[in-house]
Length: 180
Image (cartoon, rainbow, N blue to C red; front, side):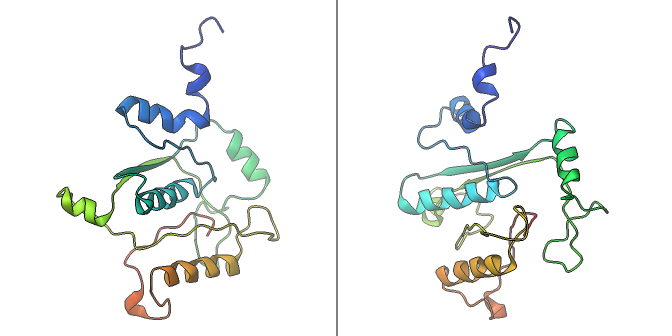
């Protein structure tokens, strides 16, 4: 422990991850680390959109990362038969048989549309609505519920003023986490 880095105690804490980014960039305002497993980055986007709409921030950065730094989680998840035997994630597919793990880091900068237009920003996409749920009791703790997922999608469409049965209302892009 004599050779432990200065910031080891806070540098390895999940609670402080977002605060280190805020510290580095000298950002002020809410700085929150969200851990909801594979949906964490999408829940971060959901919370950022809520904060922007509430007027709590003019800009939000939602980040997500997954780094496989050791074999422990792979071994544990393999014992739980969570991984696809063929190494493929097949969301919403009748042949889905587990998920595939991978490393990844991503970040999105979010503003209200009016703020982005005022600032002359390049706009990549407009988020009309977001939604988050918990599937409740399913046959397995990590097993998704098709009915709960369907209800969430319909709820998000309704909040956005869209009809999920109308092809002209279908999104050009949808983002969801791997166990969907």
